[in-house]
Length: 572
Image (cartoon, rainbow, N blue to C red):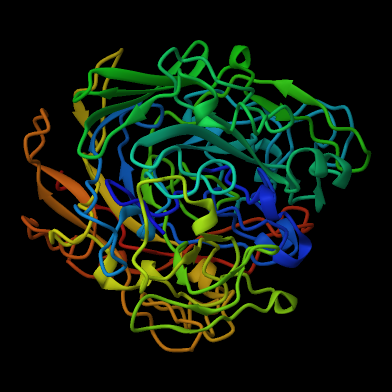
């Protein structure tokens, strides 16, 4: 089921879509659609308003804070990619793709045609054709407090950028979304939300259908060695054989497990530039979010049928990175952040090839149960399933007693699968993939990266997605019933939830004393009171304010979307 050598599970790229089974019966799986259970889109605060049904996924994150100018638009990390267990595949081993479809580094971006849509030609305080507030790149003048009456009138449009790293996997783009059976790849993605919460409007349905079926649309481009996209990144011109197929070009940038990387994100005159230097192979991949590279926006038209793409250069939104520099439509409170997406892998004993649903039993060995597939009820966690017919590695033949299939849909309604079992997460054992290791970012003046971020916080969006589980009475209005260990389909607490560790730096060629990792408790963990080796590190429910959809500037009652540790002195 998984490749035998240096493999993760089925890695999901941000525009990952089950195009071979895009049917209503399978929950509307479709290309580029964040609304159709796309795993790696930025999590919105109000999915049922935006999409009409539950969309949710786990995002355990480290947030980095600094008041230094540049910390919101100019930073560099060091990163070490995981190594997979040696030998033939065994479903009692733990592979990266079974726990996360992607790791990413994030940043808030200016986007004139994105939420709250008060600054474009169609919507400005309800008046057509008038000029609205502009987003000044790299500036804290863009900070908006939604609790201040009328503040939406000065709110520029905002998108969220994720530089995503995809582990090797089993089925390739675009049936599933790994780039290669043994190698890693990366993509620059930018999510916009075509919604006006003040007046209660969204992008017209005709246009939504042309950009993937969702008002949360994505610009997507693999990093390449030349820095030129292999196809148009913008959502209207995106090509599944081209933009979304890494093997369609020899220019695609690949990496190997255990490679040491230097990851830089910085604003330029041509837009945000992301650069990954592989210090092991001495190759470099890059991508710039520029109009000349055909990154673009969809002009906001809520009432008509038009769908106009306009090439656009994306620049970072803020100068600094603080709790106030957030994306006001996102469930998370982040700006500068690292995330380990999780919750999208489960074994299945039998797959219906026509619907890509699990028709046998779901779950890892020792915890198998009948599927919870009830699409009429809005549950989809046994969807997006793959069988041996889609195996991309001819050298892999699964043992006869191993499950022959797996599913990669979201944890809906309960939190089941390998992501919530401790035996699949890194803990230093040879039968687990090693943890990703990454440094805290450095910022600085000019082109340099010399200054640390003095504070950090740990955050996960569990309250936001626990409300979709009828087995768990999590109330986002108060935080009551929301738990650090989420509840399964059976109504019992999950076996495990991943947490971050800080470990000795391990000679990655940098001066900082430690790195971050995620999984179970990692070897060489450094004791720190702010980063305890348990799920308790995520702290308590975090209160955030949002505009009420159609509320003309009033505040929504749904405030608790995350657990957050609060800011603490950055140990790395």
